[in-house]
Image (cartoon, helix red, strand yellow):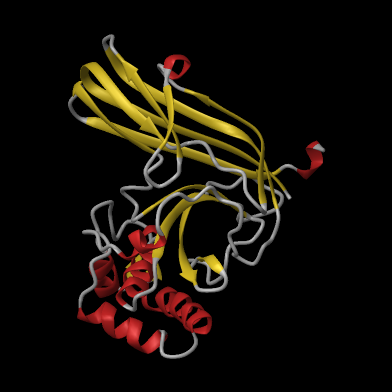
Length: 269
């Protein structure tokens, strides 16, 4: 499938910012089942940006703005060809030891409820248990926008019983790690419909299974990633996998606006 993506992030400030630096994880990788055919990033300072591979093997750009500014717009867009690999990840240039993804973070630290969830859902074969965990998380954390926020932890989302894809991924990861299964957070894009553009910046989880490697699980949709998913970046949680992170001097009262359009582009062949 050909997937067309346009991802625009705008920051506006009430006061003038005098210096900004941003790390952009806005370049999707090519690997088995995902081939980037065309991709461009438009952002202040991108022409002189330093490109590097971060600690989680994500392609990143470090940009800076040294003049006065009250707004920053970052636009990433392109065309990606995908195949349905039933969630199995092959061909990524992973340099991070798998054991790193057993590390707990503030977002994924398990409490007693998460440990109980892991013990019940993962009581069986490793792969069957992960599928059970995926569906159980989706059932226990009902999808609802506006209930949780960027700082919500997995334990808080499970206790609330409501959340969004970020919360589903965090709960899954926290439970899997509690059971000794390396797991990582993935952000990317999801094509929800074949005919119309959809706003679908999405998140899911991947777990490492001996003999199979990394496998994706999306509790929000109750499925392993298919050709409707485009992988962007990964990390221990939503913080380390964030598409954009940065700092600035000045520029109080930040307003953030994100627009993501994902559309099937087969008619462009």
